[in-house]
Amino acid sequence: MGRTQDPWEVRRASLLELGARTAAGSVTPLRGVNAYDADVAREFRPAAVLLLFAPPDRGAEPDLFLVQRSRELRNHPGEIALPGGRLEPGENAVDAALRETHEEIGLDPAHVDVLGELAPVMVPVTRFVVTPVLGWTDRADEATHVEPGEVLHTIRVSVGTLVDPATRRSVNIFGRRTAGFLLPDGLVWGMTANLLDHVLSELGWAQEWDPGQEVTMRREHGGRVWVPEL
Image 1 (tube, rainbow, N blue to C red):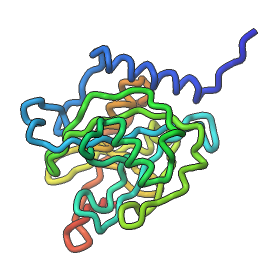
Image 2: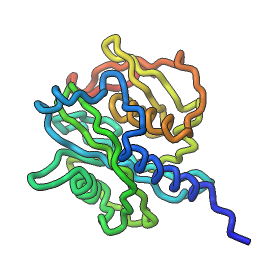
Image 3: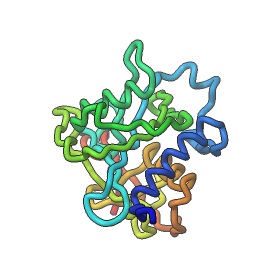
């Protein structure tokens, strides 16, 4: 009689399947402000982010790694984001996602299993075209480093928290809406939240929530940093 899989092992298999479905062109692309446009993308700079999952620190659901960016950065200061950044010459999306994750949270690429790439998305405000990479690590304990000047701290959040309807928010910024996730460490919004919302839906993990739970953003820190009005 075979061993019963832990819930997080089932989730890992679903992530692998999502990567395969994306490669086969059978995943619905992200729509809205971050939707990919091949013609416009030619003028944008290439970047990559890593959706890095790990067995749970506690509970049954896997964890996802996020970082809070420094408020002194030029692009997206103070925001909670996925580890990642622009591609260096000669890099592909996987190379860049693994390198940036190593630099930002200290996890060696050798400890990351790449499960696939997702379709690119766009960030019009900073003119980046971003390829999301799916990753898994069984060595989450190695993610102990924070890059000074770039990352304030690492955030490890359970998928169970992300899909909890009580976590979900609609975010209003300049009259536009993005998805949102209100975590104990702060609000995830913008492209990161839209991408997470899309991925959770494609995986079939999302739960119904009330989009009327809205948060409005305002500027702080000399007008450079967006913060929620809570």
